Picture 1 (spheres, rainbow, N blue to C red):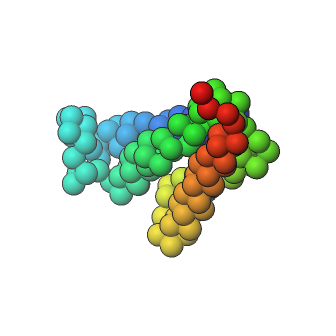
Picture 2: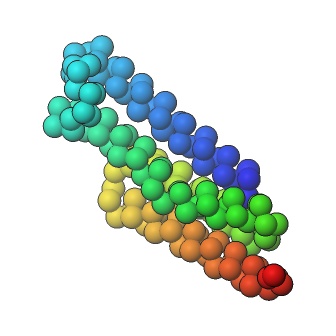
Picture 3: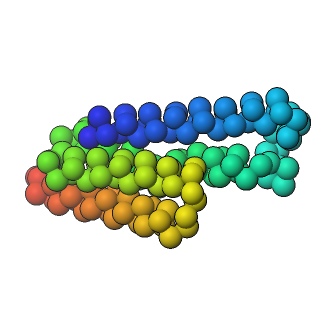
Length: 138
């Protein structure tokens, strides 16, 4: 699970880098004043920048459940092959979600990727509970 968690971190930094690149380009092109970033006023931001900013924010929402599950699974030694498979499936779903969000932004396709990732998270948590419930608790 730890490698899948690291992959999610790399995805987050990749989106952050993309967002930074868009912001720098917009300021240099005179599309946005630097002062607009004080409050991140969406009304003055180009659409592509708004999409990237929203996607970056998304990477701090549902993935919190993934990081928590991964940390618990690793710390308590609860990992199993199915859990690791679902962890990688989650990362893949989030990468697809980000790709769609940052390119075509097709809402239906984005929703499908989002829901696929959410199902993976739910399955990981169910597997953690299953593994944990089979252990003696003192």
